[in-house]
Image (tube, rainbow, N blue to C red; front, side):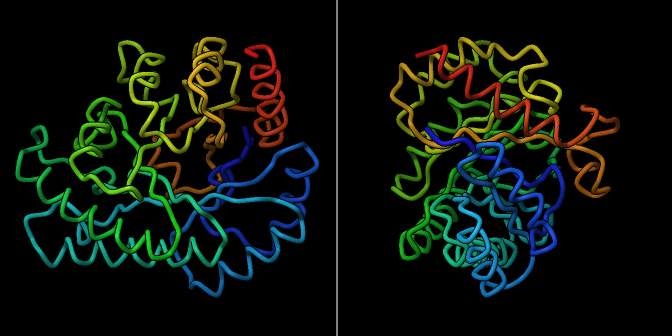
Length: 283
């Protein structure tokens, strides 16, 4: 098992100016960081990867699409093509970064709603888009971890069962699932069962408290979660995803209107200890 820290808490553009922070994350005990990919070039991420290598941090990648003009399930073929092109760019950047996994709600436009549930036609278009993305990801050695989001952030995929069924329909080895404790706490009647039933599709896990603050301070059933992860044989990343108000656009997108911790340091230092102790206790 590896413990990671998502950089969303501070920025969507990680660079040399974050070196001191990255070194403190490493010194706290983290195995790696999750790097947001939203802008820049492959060369930018190659340089960032070199910096992380010097610090001794491994990395995963995360992204999302908030622009309806590049919607992977749109009836407009041009919009779908723009979405696929965006994903190809994000995959290329992930490869340059040295990240083998790119995760997030990479199936539809974040925050865009049709006013109804997903349709058969939308799922069909999604299968086609994901297969094209999966082919490019395979060529770059990157695995996509699709994320089910709560109903207030997307409408295509809200539960792990729905996500697993869709991944089976896509049928591509490079299109897999991720599990997020925050979203599962909202949408799943049995969050632990939702993980266990769908374990064979899951390649990445986000550790996120029910308020998106410091892991361990809220009401997520952590002891049961860590036990289920271990019992399933999961040995991949457990990456803390928390949010704050430092970035106005990201705070608005994630509906963060107040501070959930006294400092960012409390999130990653206490959060790391929470995961390490919880995992050890489960074993």
